[in-house]
Image (tube, rainbow over all chains, first blue to last red; front, side):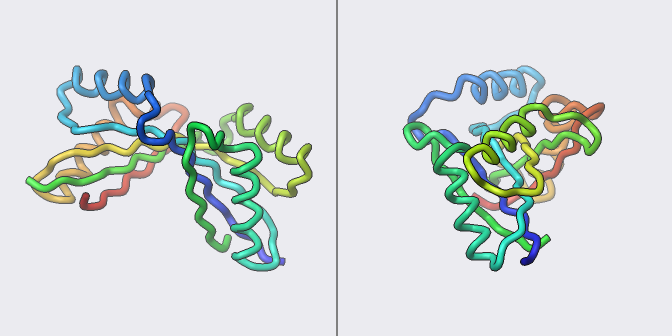
Length: 83
Length: 83
């Protein structure tokens, strides 16, 4: 078993309203910053022991499917690196 | 001017309690997943026009300092990619 860190990035699907990101963007603009767009995402970093990187990725993907992301409104991305 | 996407990842400093991450980890364990640790972070993706990647990074860093991160409890990381 090797230690891996899987990162799951959970984003709202495009078209889903994100009032928090909009508010943050407006606050930055009020501070004088210029930006085209701001998107926000949640990122989970999971430390786990697995037989291989592929196994770690598979487990992290299952965690995303079952709990971390809501497939109705979220897209997610999984990355794996050895610890 | 070129279009860049700057990503700002905001994490709690180590030692700062993260009850949300703890709850998420417990929920995953109740579902039968095994993991050593779970950390959560906020990720902001900023689309901006800048003269260079270095300029985009500097502006994103300033946004992190002034609004996106709270230096008392957060660490942050800035990445920049051309759009």
